[in-house]
Image (cartoon, rainbow, N blue to C red; front, side, top):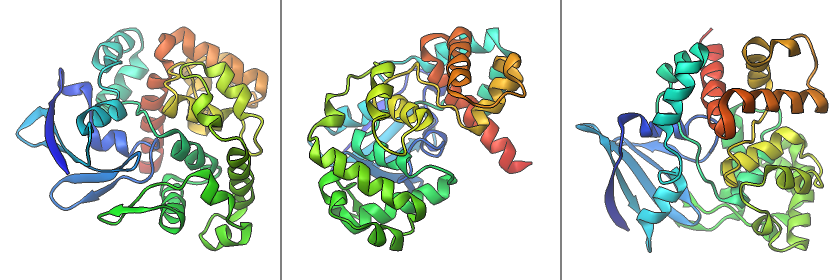
Length: 293
């Protein structure tokens, strides 16, 4: 296992714990000593901030090219979050308040396969429940890479599972859609790998072929695994923010396909091509305030 340190350009470039616990990824856990452990691809990875220097991030990961893998996962080289947040804060007091409560919350670049199945499991489930289901699938079907960490299984392994077996792992009504999607991906090797990064409309069109994948789940996958920074997943929290703050003309309306498109256009008009980043900050802020209320 290699070790190293990254120097961040600004204190608000990354809040590690907040980012990893904001509902994007579901298998990162805290361990003694202030470390967060998880998987990047098939690598064991441990990340920690330096308590004496807010600009330093320490990492420990299986090689080779471990530092590149960490930087790529955290998207440290392609989005200047503090600058974007400053622009949005100057133009939008609601965002400014959310950013002050959640500075450094970044969008991650996830493994496409794990992200796909994670959000397929996410219907009508809180983050803790999604985490339990993702861990259960990895432990049951994935390879142990050490330190009680398991690589997420590929679709070929999941395609061999029965619906009843997945229900015993706690997937409930989601089990049939997981099996169906796994069999589709297994029968279409490389399907996820061939989808074009940053092309939200194509990803929406292609993913909507699969059962159980509506526009919100497709947008989550597009944003968190395909660098589609213009994807704005519209869950209940984000829809409420949209109606109250982004486009009040949608207040009292239901989230139809047409209104979903209107809402996304409103977010893009407000925040530009990185609206998905602003959405994640406002989503997490709204979710946390709702939990505390």
